[in-house]
Length: 485
Ligand code: GLN
Image (cartoon, rainbow, N blue to C red; front, side):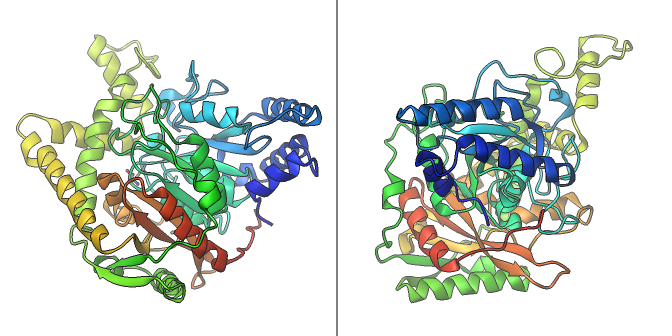
């Protein structure tokens, strides 16, 4: 049986079980399967047990505890925590310890959550497969010869294999939703600015957003509600009240319109198209209106994203130079300061991160700025407008999360082919809207059944409606198998 966060939380609170027993079970599962799956880079056994004991004492003493009291949660290792290290799965931050906790960490721990460990990612969140992780590849629990997706692959695997009750990921172009789809779990990317980025190591600052990866929409809504809302430490965080999405979640969504973009129908594997078709039938049966919509800039999203995200990354990653932050070369051959920077960075960053830094530096350089970066910003505006037009005709946009189920480890060597995995997810970030990936059945054509996901996207700050629609779908979608990890 999959862990149900809300159920675990209630059982701890009503003393059907204890936080300690829950944490012990989770740690035992991690001890059994993490060496194979490599979901976690670091696990905080002692601290997690101590936190659990403290919560059990509080409950036994009749004190009021937070809404996540005793629940074991995994954190993507690009979100800073005072406990342990924050490495971004990069050699350049191998021994880095943060002097502060990210806002989301404070909010979760104040609600009583127990941080069990830090999960692996593609280095600095750049990738779609978790093969670009300095601490080894992460494996998909449904078939260990397949990738889990990325970049939040460690978090998605930790949830799928029940090595935590829920996890946090970050999503710059699909990094929560795509691994969630490939691992058969829920991945929710809220609207840009809805959750503080303070303490999220920046990749593309205008695109990055933290969000939950969970077994259910109900769990995702609860975590989202705990984390969302303004933060004085993040000036891009939206200063608007957070609606109570948890109590309204079970309401049947009022008459709503589901938009199907014609551009989301080509090049998908048949299992993915079939999952979308089933969802269409479900929403029709619920009484929703199905409308065709047009998003002609879907394909252009990838090229736009691969200008804007690397441009921002090249600037954000400049601080990792061996002096201010990060690995410093041991070589005595460095001729001067510049050489020291160059050698430290060449040793510390992996090839994909170096490729992005070079790409980003290039598109921002004099002479190319107008041709690439400015142009990409102009297209960004058009992509936003395209969504606005679409949302005049529909409330949610339905489509695949990823064109295919999980591919084989080592099976995708062309970086451009890898970039195309994000064709349905990058525009959500470019437009700053919200999106959620939901488990939607299996691809049965390979040796082992592989999960496929569907995605629902909605307008900025339409999370309450999006979650309600997602929950309605989840209720009929029903139980999923438990991976034998
Ligand atoms: N796969 C995309 C990339 O490599 C998205 C990554 C992300 O969302 N962090 O940039």
